[in-house]
Image 1 (cartoon, helix red, strand yellow):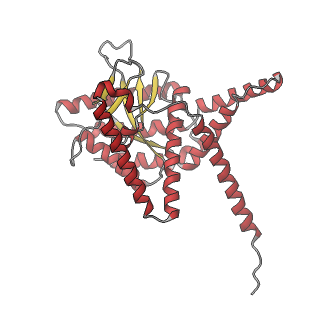
Image 2 (cartoon, one colour):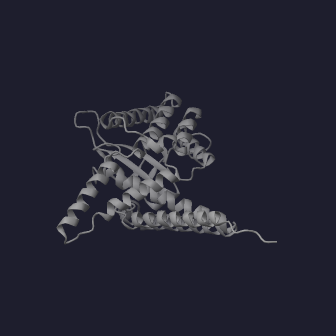
Image 3 (cartoon, helix red, strand yellow):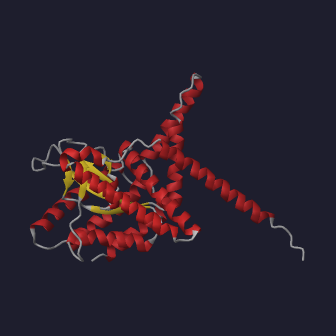
Length: 325
């Protein structure tokens, strides 16, 4: 029986494939131009000793091999989906680290630090935002910091699990130890090197469509660095770069991250009410970080969320923060 060819369907498939290839091209460009390497465990041999650093390296290898073995038993489509999710998470991590610092998404005193592979896998922390010491506050002796786990999964259940795991660590319940970072070196004071014990963990993320849009913008911004002998063309590039820089400086993604962080910190303050010393330290640190972000919001003004207003990851984190207990 003759069935007419559905050319609209074919054209739609081709268009989607081209769009996906274009997005992948932008992503590869951003990943290739990564300027924020991870902290290296090998730089801490003096702090921990050769044997311990090597032991941690072996643990990372075993965990990565175990994960690879688990993938072998899954259908190909599911494996591809997981790997795309991993790549998207890495991409978003690099974007936040670079653009967040370059365009002051957490204020002009904030530094973004990518954690070691060990702390990524073992302690579930991808980034640390470290704020410079407030010179007007004589009581502040060390920088305030917040630890970020970057989620690009858009999986509501997974995001909820990460958030509740962070709360369990802060409350030291359900067999969880206090949140920690093993391999850390301060950008503000390089003499601060070694484990971090006072760690405030939060989850941040952005849904794929918004990440794709941001990736394209960054890729185009980076492409403007091309040098050209043609003076007129170079001037055009410089004008374009300045325009794109302004868009990145005021990109709504920073408001998404602010809202996600603020929602979790606010929830922590409502839940962490135990009178013990450790909880008091957490509360003081959380309050200080929350004040930092509130000040950033004031100085930035109202940035229009635009297409990010219905971001699924943001909505999930805000809703889950209200339910945490």
